[in-house]
Image (cartoon, rainbow, N blue to C red; front, side, top):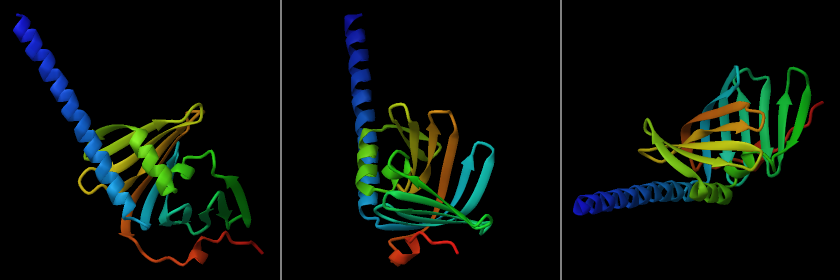
Length: 188
């Protein structure tokens, strides 16, 4: 009986170590892919509670993003620490700091890599989900493709239980973008 119990405990420990190393290997492959990526052009679906929007984006590491929404009346710009949403329909620009948002961690490659290292991981339907909870601010889940380790998007639940998902479909990587496309426009 003691031998059976000993054997069971050994099997459980070996399985747990193998499982841990499998996850560490998956994280390392994601990090290697990110280190080779300087820019991404992608299409997106953004869901905020009951609203769904579509569009395309240009991402340049670190911290430069331009998204053009399909309705052509809205654009999102991130240039370093400034986020601006241009509402052409109302001829308005709304400015927000990104320092406390999930964008600050996702758009900075070094911070994203650190986040990957400390996040808990699970594999669901060919997706790698890396989950991190920020103290009293938000829960962030970053999604990667299990087969090629491409970024698939992210989901955020803020302190008010608002759920936002930003799912992406990469068109190309390592394009040369002119930095002026990330310049926040001025309205007339």
